[in-house]
Each structure stands twice: as structure tokens, then as C-alpha cells.
Length: 500
Image 1 (cartoon, rainbow, N blue to C red):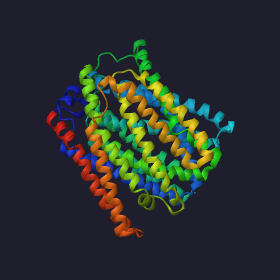
Image 2: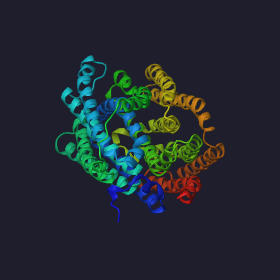
Image 3: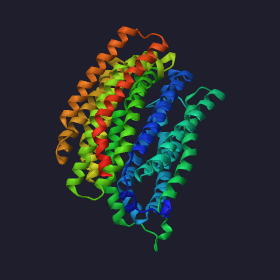
Image 4: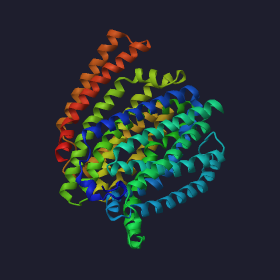
């Protein structure tokens, strides 16, 4: 029997992409991740004050800047080339080189953070030592974790991917809770706990992932990185870096503005409400991407333009209608979700759940359209939409936050995100023959209206003020939502099985 670590890319491509058992594994695993993430939100908002949650958000935003601008472009290149590297037996070699690059990124962050800290642009509320340690540690260990684990999924090992992903959240959750309870209920100890969990599973995940790769020892001559390799990487990565940096300005730059104008407490409340939507949509997104993205990357790896366009069309047709229904589900149940997933000091954040759902929907749509650029290796197509979104977001935040408070940030994020989606559709969709089919999107709208009517009816009948009645509304609407999602996705799941 051929060992797993020596399995070739051809072997992988000859197998079914994902079977029914694997889909069940993905759904169960992702559901566990989703529930753990929301439980983490509940515990964090119970143990930490709104001010401390504001500090948490500022540190995570700073990590996201370096990760999106310097790490994400190279990570996307790895995703695009991983199958080819696995087939040639060079993946292990290139990924070890990638670790050296991450150390360089951490060094850049360590040098740049003191200048940001001393500039007074933002009040982090933690010492510079803590800031450097948390940001650099996350850039290194969280990136390794989030490279090794999703790569397992791209190579067809969805079971271990899901298991290790759930374990990462569970370990981070446990460490953060213990440190906050045992030492101090502060942002730095919560973030330190998250980092410890990520680091521990990064080591385990990397070991499992490397066992899945072909051994570079089978090569007669170790592969070297030539100038043409660096040129290919740079050509792919620099537009992604610019687009990702602009995406950070659009999606997270508001936090610096809000802290300066409204303070840490208001920032913490907004981020908590937004976080419910972000967590739920991320859970939805992760299930679909885990199932459909391996097929997408497999189909585009051959390089045939028509097949690449068809692959993206299938992906968009599966994701976009389901996304619209998910956004409606979150927005309709915002009061109940806030009661369940946020502590008592954060109940005023219910209105921000709706803004978060709309803004995160725009983010997912941007991600779907950006895959067109990744498929065709023309990532410079992302620069103009990113620039439009960044300028609009910061400008509107500066105008709306003083006028409308924290809700002004939500308005700005939704408007700027919608503008970017529209721009991407105009500039990119024509390259693949158009966007998602209109009929499924219309049916998603009709289903959302029916779900909204059901929610209003249950609220009128049950008047859900107690925990039991709130749970009843969530369960009944949730079961209906899952049934509708199955109807939307059934055709795509059957197509995948037939191709297998």
C-alpha cells in the first residue's frame, strides 16, 4: 500500500473531491468551530469590560494589517501553486522557505510598532512590550497554523483539517479563559491565551501537514529559487498586497478612528455586536469554502480559460444565494442572538449585529469576485476596487461617526463594501461570462422574506423574553433556515458527487 506522505497529486485528483461522509464531517466540524467561537464571544464579553474588548480589537486589527499586507499575498500564491508543488515533490522545500519569510515579517512589525505606538495615532491601552510580543507572535504562529491546516484541506485531507481547526479554537478558548480568570481580566492576557492555543496547534498541524507532503529527499537535486520564481511571486503578490492593505483600511481602519472619537468602550460594544455577525458568516463561509474550494482550485489548475470560467461560475452560484439567506437570518434574529451570545454589559450592541451582517456579506462577495483574479493570475485587477473601498470607507467613517456615533461606522462599512462589490462585478464578472445566476438569487430573496414572516409570527405568539422562549425561536427559525440552505445547495452537491 502506498504511504500517505508519498501520495502524488495525480492520485489526489483521481479521487472524489469530497464525498457524503466528508461533507458531514465538514458540517459537524465547522458547526463545532462556530459554536466555540460564539461561546468564546459570550465568555469574553462576560469576563472583560467593553474597554478591554476595545483593546482586544485594536491589537487584533494591528495584527490584521501586517498579515493582510505582507503575509496574505504570499499565502494566496501558495494556495494557487500547492498542487503543482505537491506533484513535483517541492512543496516541503518551498514551505520551509516561507517560514523564513514569516520571521522577516515579524521583524518588520517589531521595528514598525514602536513608531506607531509613540505617534499617538491610537491608544492601544497596553504596553509597547505586550503589543510587540502579541502582534509578532500572532504573525508567526497563527500564520503557520492557518497555512498548514487549510493546506491539508486543499490536498483532500478534510478530516484532519476540520479536527485540527476545532482543536485550535478549543485550545485558544481554554487558555484565554484560564489566564483571564487566574491572572487578570485584561486584553493582554486574553490575547496571550489565544496565542498559546494557536502556537500549540501550529506545531501539531505542521507535523501532520508535512507528513502529507511528498518527501523532498526523493529529488536528486534540491530545488532552488531562481530569479524567475521571485518574479512570478512578485507579479502575483504585489497587487494582492495593495488590495489587501486597502481592504484592511476599508474593513478595519475605522477602529482607529472610532477609538479616537468615541473611546474604547464604544469601540468594544460595536466590535462585540459586529463580531456576532462576523462569527456566524465566517462559519457559513468556512463550510462552503471547505467543500467547494478544493474543487475550484483543482479545476483551474489545468490552465484552460473556459474551464476556469466555468469553475468560478459554479462556485459563485453555490455561495452567493446561500450567503443572501444567511445575512437575512442573522439580521432578523439580531435581538435574540445578542441576548444569547453577549454578556449583560453588551446588550446595547444588538443594533450593530445588523450592520455587521450587511458589511460581512459585502466582504464575502468581494472574496468571491477576487477569486476571478486569482484564477487567472491577474491580481492587479483587484487594485482599483480596493482603492475605491478604502477611500470611501475612511471618508464616510470620518463624516458619519461624529454625526451618528458607532452606527455611523456600520453605515460607512456597508456603503463602501457595496460600492466595491458593484465595481468588481462591472470589472471582473464579464471575464467569466457574468456573475451568479439571477434565478437562485431571486429565490433566496423570496425565502428570506418567508423566513422573516415566520420570525415575526413566532415573536408575536411566544413573546420571547425568557431563555426558553428565546431558544425556541432560534431553534425553529434555525431548522427552517438549514432546510432552505439544503434546497439551495442540493443541486451543487449532486453535481460534485456525479463528477467524483
